[in-house]
Image (cartoon, rainbow, N blue to C red; front, side):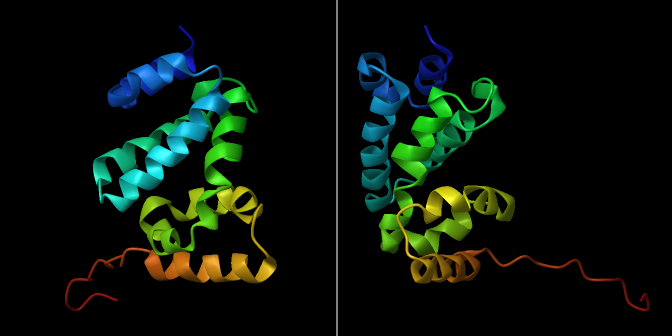
Length: 141
């Protein structure tokens, strides 16, 4: 069994039949993109998180020397299409770290105009969780 299939089954066991029947990583990601949108709509944060983790794995060197079929599939069939759903933009700040967002910007920009990309960046910043700064002990500077 291929590594991408094994990793998908491990993280997304409820889609085992879909994963086993997928002819390629691209075919799988076309279906997983739809599953992701349904999970978001259903407020299923567990499934949303697991799909995001699998996408990140696909684009990491843990999936093999990059670029590969798995990373290309996750990028083209998943990441490039996420920003086409503007209702998702406010969630990007909680889904992607600043480094991940910066790394994914070329994929996110693929279907967006320059104005839309600028608006996505603003939405991302507004959606970032508030980071609490450590308070200094009294009297220290």
